[in-house]
Amino acid sequence: MAGNTAVIHGKDAVCKYGTAGSGTTIDYIDSWSITTTLDTADSSRQEQEWKEVIPGMASWTATLTGHLLLSEASQLAIFQALIAATPGTKLTGGTALAFHINATNHYSGDSYITTFTVNSQLGDRVNFTIGVQGTGVLTQTVA
Amino acid sequence: MGYQTSVMHGKYASLFRYRANGFKGVGLNDATWGTGYSGGGSSADFDVAIFSTGTPDTYKFRKNEGAWDDNSSSGYNITGAAQTLSDSQTITFAATTGHTVDDQWSVGNFDTEATTEVTTTAQITTTTHRLCFPKKLTWTDSNNKTLFYEEYAIGKAHFDPNGGNVGTVTVSGNNAYIIPSGLDQIGYLTGWTLNTVLNMADASRCGQHWKEYIPGMASANGTAEALHIIADSFYQEFYENATDVNENVFLLELYFYDASQDQTGDSIKCWVVFNNWGLSSSLTDVVKENVSFNVFGIPSLVEST
Image 1 (tube, each protein chain N blue to C red):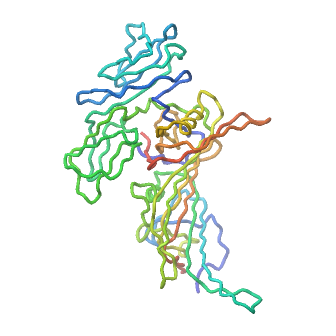
Image 2: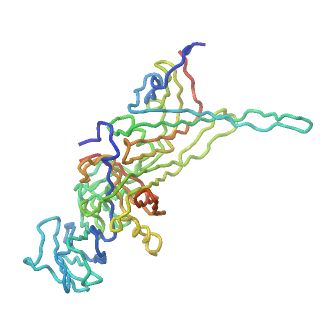
Image 3: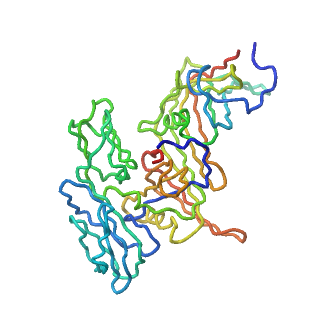
């Protein structure tokens, strides 16, 4: 399996908006994270000492933080995916998010923007935090 | 003009708010507006300001932000009864004395106000008439489309998205909007936040490996912090939310970037209900207040003008 063979610094990671693998870098992001979770069911039984589990369904969430700049088209599109007369536009296909660790290796999937927080304080730049709920599979693309 | 194209520092933020009866000032706020405006087909907004103090105090007024009428430099005596400005618009002061010069009240009335229609939406054309009060607007569409949703804070109506285009849309309603200059700036703001949330429902089912979700309802809430100045405080708005039997909502303009502090930057406008207010004092810091709120309906993003 290919993929990075050297440690990657976070400054080289980006989040892109658009068709996975060919999207546009969302500018002014300063961090992102992905969390995948696998539900498990307890299959433990009497006469055992150690619990056993069996896998259930998986899910994933993500967060992005950055400087708010709504003239940046991708930021505005993400904002409007939540804050709209009909909230909850699914980010998919040509409007999907892809989390890149480098130019060719990334993680992507269909998602919804479920939180968007703007923070404007006297001593700092205007910041935002976005919460993402994946719906369906999180795909790892390795080149 | 478009959104800001460079990173914004929070020191350029600002917050403007609607206070009861469109009050702007530091003194006694005891005026109430009459609801009997009769414009004969024309919308109008009125400002009333305290002209002088005495026995009684006097006021001046203007219509549609025109020249002030100060009764030939005498001011109009405050009587304590309903007093007619023009076009059957009245104002009533509870007290005839105790006011502060230059304190001001504002109100706006729609009468077949024009909108700009785009497919299934209509937005009030005059930009300074777009800060509208919830549940006070009557939209009329010549194509009789069904009203679907209102964005009060930006004067926009969404009609049935599956019902075809609207025709000519007008809006009416007394005491239905506030002009931007009628909002009061929070003078000692130190910061604000706004958080929007979309509830999701789990649509996962047997046979799948990865969960699926469908969107539910969205909501927003936020906070604001300021150095505590009583005349500038949010306390009165919180108190009204807590004690008034009428449904009270308050308009906030949350500016990300307003370098000249004159309501011209990128902002989010929303009607809110205040649900928490606090004050803190310590040996080593100034007295500060904080307030939190729930947004009533949708928050609206507006780019700088």
